Structures are given as structure tokens and as C-alpha cells.
Length: 420
Ligand code: FCB
Image 1 (tube, rainbow, N blue to C red):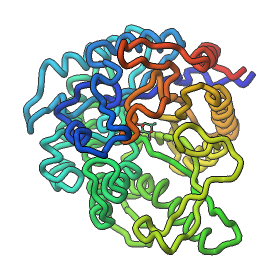
Image 2 (cartoon, helix red, strand yellow):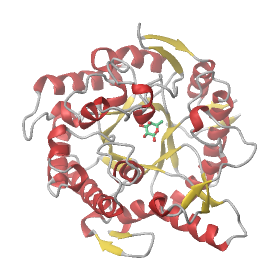
Image 3 (cartoon, rainbow, N blue to C red):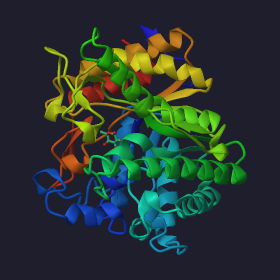
């Protein structure tokens, strides 16, 4: 048995837009209605019905012996128009937070998990120069309202990956394909994080605030190719470390070496949030200038989860946890999971990834918690309902939940605070 440290946080992760349903004041609502944006023409609709009944899944979490839960709030619900707060929406969020506390779970609240209020999107979204100020005002106001129930915050979820999908690859709202826009959005995002970090700390000095970074090790497909090695290093810096380095140092260094000073961001990371799913194996492809000459080459003969989501590669989690040590902060695995409707691979996936977490702790990496994505199947952005990440299967018509075998396994690990 591998025991985890006393007080280790065992949770599941979620986001408002993917779980609540009917987030009509958010930019993704309009985006979803555009033909061709979501696989199979799916819609988020009622999602997992959390706005009315999140407590049903909170009960499932208690059944799994979780002591923690990561969830997000929908900015567009709380502030559907600039400066105008919705009192009923705030009351519902406070009710959800109390419901978690009553069930013995510590909330970790994400302030922005990809979606923006439509009024922010209309002003230019991540390119709007008023965004950092508006986001910080929102963060401060929420901290004042909810600070008695929560002191643990993620400002932004996967800022780099999200902005790349939104401004370079065109797959997420607002669907741009423009590297200059991406660069500007990344700078704006660092400023927004820094402003929110300071707004939260002004209200709640003891708060723990960070980002949940999508960390994906990049390796050369052909290790003897100098071009592939160079490309993998550039990609590794851009996807994994560029943004976190900026929160440590106040300097944003682009993959080609251009530096932008963002002094207000220096020292705005109280912990490192790690979202880990898979790795990249890349080769230089001259026919792909639009993707930075990157072509992904899946490793031959390895286990793949559903829908081409990527290779199952537990060692990559150890790699990024070791690397996260450089920031000298506590580390949380804020997401980890896989799409696997048949639950064929998930049990071994959970055990193997947690083995790497235990290994990292044994080596001295201060990992303090693990949040599995997700308690139940949910709306998977551009992939719609086609990818099933849940420990429980969801029947969208009846909202019935059916545990997959991994649910009991994960619950047993949480209960014992140890790996079998
Ligand atoms: C992560 C996202 C999360 C969910 C999982 C499967 O990258 O943060 O919202 O979509 O992937």
C-alpha cells in the first residue's frame, strides 16, 4: 500500500458551463448555435443539470469519500451585464458552496473556465483592454460574497491551451486563426490573472490563488532529428512553462525569445495547479506553418482513449510534477482523466497516474491533492457529448447516473488515502 500524506485532498473537477446547463448569458451559448462548431451538432442544453440539482452529484462525491471538489462559477450568470449582479445567481452559488461544506468537502473555485459573459465577448473578449480590470472587479466581488465559504481559487483554467484553441486553431469561441491575436490574448490573460490575484488577496489575505495549467510534455518523434528536438523544446516552453514562468518572474518570454514585461504578475502564484491528460510526440512539418510547423505523431502500439483524445502516458504526469518543483510552491493535480465510455482503461489509468503522484511525493514534490475529471459525463466543448469522462455515466434524457466500475475504485482510494 502506498499511503498519501495526512490531509491529502481527494476530489473531482468540474466547470460551470459543462455541468450547470442553460448558461445563456455566456459566449459559448451563441457559439454552440453556429453550425459546425460542435461535433454532431450537439448542444450543452441542460448539461448535468447542476444549476437546479448539483447536490445530487455532491452526494455521489460523498459516496466516494471525497474531501474536496473543484467547481467553477459562470461569470455571465453572476454579472449578465456590465456591473449588474444577479442576486439570485449569487444565492444559488452560495447554497452550492454550503452544500459542499455540509458534506465535508473543501471547494476549489475556478473563476474562469473558458467561457466569458456575452457582454465581455462583444467588447473583444481576451483582446479587450478592459478585461483585466473587469475580471478583477468580478473576482473581488465574489471573494467578498463567498469568502466565508472558500479561500482556495483558480483564476484561469488552462489559459495557454484555451487561447490557442480560441485564437489560433479556431476550434473554440471566438474561432480566430491569427497568431498575432493569440500573442496579444496571452499577454491580456496574464494581466487578467495578476489583477484578479491581487483583488482576491486584497479581500482575503490568506487566500491560496493560482491557475490550472494544462501541462503536456512535448517529445521529439525522432530523437535523432535536431529539428524535432528543437521543435519539441519550443513547444514545451510555449505550452507548459512560458505562462507559469511569467507568474513567477513578471516576464513573458515567447517561444522565439521575444520578451514582454508584465511586472504586476511577478509572484502571483500561491500553488501550481496541474491539469494532466497526455503527452505530445512531435515532428517538424514544413507544410504546417499555421500550426507552428508542428505535426503530432502518436506513439505506435500504445493504448489510446476514446475519440483520438491521446495516448495514455502516466509517466508524463511524473515528468510535469517533477518539473513543477522549480516554482517552490505546493502542487495540486487539478485535473486528470480520460474519455472511456466502456471503462475499459480507466481503472488502470487511475491507479497508474496516482502511482506517479505517490512517486513524486516520495521524491519530495509537495503534491497536496488530486482532482479526477470527472464525477459524471459532461458537455465536452467542441466534442459535444461524444467523449465520456465520467466516473458515472449520464443518461441525458432522464438525468440518471450509473456508476462505472472506476467509481468504486476511486472511492476506495479516497477512503483509504492510499493506493491498493
Ligand atoms: C480539460 C478542460 C476541461 C475538460 C477536460 C476533459 O482540458 O479543462 O474543461 O474539458 O479537459
